[in-house]
Image (cartoon, helix red, strand yellow):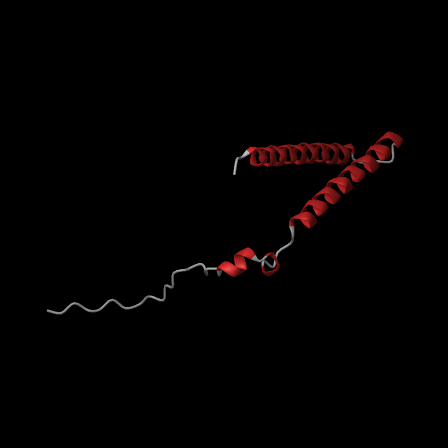
Length: 104
């Protein structure tokens, strides 16, 4: 009695490509956005969110705003985004200070 061989079922396991050491150390090969532009973009978005909330506040005060909940939602979103940005900044500063305290 013979046992039939197992046929390949078409399954190909995913194996992540291994980056070469030179690609990991060269930032120009990363192909992504640099950290400074990400920070700048985030601050610009926060500023535009606050500007939108300010515009809606003026419209609500003058009676030109049809839906008051639009202002409430935008103002709350701006406040939460500011709190998150502040918390991330504080954690980054704490990490930097901890790194500076390390002895070499």
